[in-house]
Length: 115
Length: 112
Image (cartoon, rainbow over the protein chains, first blue to last red):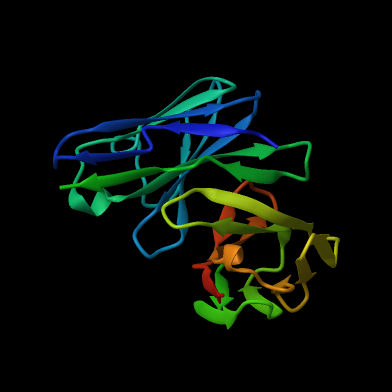
């Protein structure tokens, strides 16, 4: 199974600022995903990030608010822009193992608090 | 639109008890179904994955079943231990996409 790390693990940010979250995988993967988990809620997919192409965003999420980079097959970043308290969530990246029945593996998450 | 529901939302049991967590989904056109464990403030750990063509999967004290026709999956935990205390999430992998649709989870507490 893939091993995924995220930086930072947590942060407290002020309203109106931006935070970039990094996701690193220990093997090359085609599909990377970014999810949001708001307090007390389940996970919601923000976007799918493929290397060499623009990210595909889910309904309710836009590139201007959540720009994503995918420069290579082991790394991706998610930026949360112009933050408001409503953006306080855990942000998780995941990867799909195409060889293991498309099983998805998750990073440890980044806990973001916006004040 | 796929919707995944987990019942109960919370469950508290004494140590040693066998228990069942339930997951239902509205669209049977799934590629697979995955069960995860989430500890407080942490990421997700994959427990079991059941392909749409399979009926069940087992790993240690865990057994997951899948009934596509009725849109249900169960996670059976045998001889529960305090270390099993966590939130358990099920997620349906939609056919034709890479998207996972998650339920809200069942928060399990196993009391010593």
